[in-house]
Length: 551
Image (cartoon, rainbow, N blue to C red):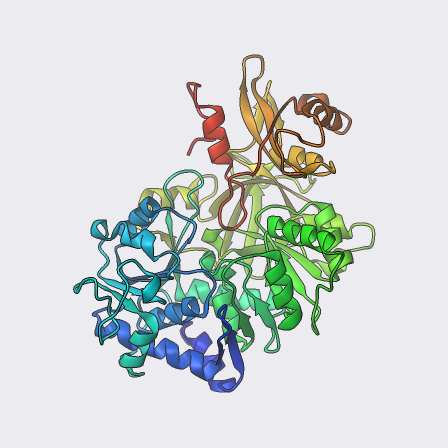
């Protein structure tokens, strides 16, 4: 028997079986059962339809991890509107591009970010504007209908007032599993962001896979340290909801607030980039090793870049958490591989295995191929590009057929090409060595920037580091390190550049030694913790005829 896979079924499942159970702990302290969560989503659905939003229209959500984000997402999707989450760290110009590119018809924006939308509202196609605290939005003050008194047509409306007046009845359209239901924009680290189109089917199957590999159950308490906007929170807005678990919301990632939430709400599961884990480690050490768990043992998943072994050890041995490492991209759900291979894990290889991106998950064909599209040997040495095929992979890029064609057919027809370079071992587990655009070719030798970063991370005085190719008259390119010192002071770091060069010389082949080092206060990052090497490359190659890694 075949039944369509529809994402709104996740909320229906939870409200049917767990209606009286706690669904959401709001960032503001409000608490909602699944019945209350479902009713608020219904009211938002009704309110959108009252304002002319129909199936297929795009509804953007610009919000940190609050209950409003979840309610707006499901409220939009229940009427067949396309949920379009926005990165809250972008600029007004970025929002102008995305909202215009997607043709967004309505937007809910948290009060903290609504002014960025207000600044460009005359340049975008959006007509319906909703926020969660009208008094804090420019021109605040409301009329009897909950609309901003500063203007009439297209005025900002208050989310809670809108829900109160909307009722719970709305027309639920017929939906097909192959229809687009979300558009997630890439971080744009190499140019304009692209809209990744995901269907009911891709989202549903990905949520099933997340539930399996993250071992999500109805008694889980999930802490939202991962941005909900990022690939729909890695699919957890579906998986956690569908399983009837509890969402604990946050407005940001502050180590003290994270630890307090973990211990007071008995959090059992969270996701965090290595940079966030390192912040928690710093807090743990500075606060005299406080308790890092409540009544539940914590499972944590990291991604974005391979965590250093020291990070894994601290999280597992000091915090007492269990750490998993996944790999993927916005275009793939993200989950396509995971390193949690317990049958292959021993006391000797445990940390080395957890650093790897891992093996393909169920129903997912992950390959590492050379420039001709042939599979590289499983020798853990031969470099190739990671390509993937699976039910959780995107449908296409929004309104970008040429980019879609290239993404799926560059080296191998019908596979999504990640742009990541990796090796594969005898068990089919991959290890990312670099990005295609980040590989350094110095004097004809290929050098992995990730290998160099891992080496420098081992130095006690290095808090963060990014390696890029820099121009060299002698070699064409040479590695350059941008280093954040542990004391945070680039003018007076606890180790000299020459000492760091010597440190790499003792550990690496001579052609890989890092001779150029620049100390910085911080590295440019995306909201999900990925280092934006493009910015560093662009600055480094500004006076050259070509730009390494451009595009």
